Length: 385
Image (cartoon, rainbow, N blue to C red):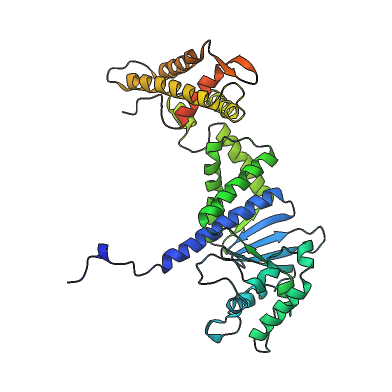
């Protein structure tokens, strides 16, 4: 009798591996979008158009530069080598990695190439890991010439040419091999850091817990550009710098005004019947609370945690009262009672800080923490039953 399917090893993981590759590529596309928001010379990112990703650069001259990016996220038994990048599928010309990359040089724009991999290269390919135009790359002329000779030998005297007549020398001299993070999770984490830098440089203030959601919305835009029909609308695969800049500012504004579609403080306050200006004020108080926590000069961190615990305990007790059968408190009355209770805990409190001595705790911090607790789903102002 055959074994149960629950006890048998998985037989086909090819689709799962392919999915990981596409997900990694989309996160890399999101990274390029974040770079574009900081670098005015990068003005468009195209997904799944001519190559996996295509970057359009302004050089300050009439000649534009197209950078064709091939993304490779896969498990390999060893590092990338000359043998791997020149291997032809079935021995057919034009099927190797470097041939496919070189073949992208078929337009009037200047072509550059990038191979973005999560797996590293061996020593022979290391010279092209140095960024194009860098002083370090300039010192690698002899090593790059040796690499060109090694690649050419692999093609048995018939080296490939681009449609514009360029050879492997042009490819090697204009290719940057970028070693990217090993995993999707590591790339994701680096992108969140880059998003934080973008917000800082742009002067956009956004509370920490909304930044993951903002990044996911950016990733969704990239994914759409990866699969939308490109022939029906030529903009379907393109992400453009000014459009993305405007989108970012609009999304941050909506988050801060409580208008973004997230399960957050704004959702709960709207459900309780509060006006937009009240919701905006609540968001601002929560932002101020989070900011004060980061630059805490009024109490010791442990004391702050104890204070938060005391307020949360009081809010949970009020929640039990509000949600009890027969409660007559309206959502607004319950909101006001929570705020009064939180502020009462701080009333007259003097906490000691070794550097500045005794200092009263600002009352708005209690309400700010109340809104933080609400945003984290500990409290809501209408009875969920």
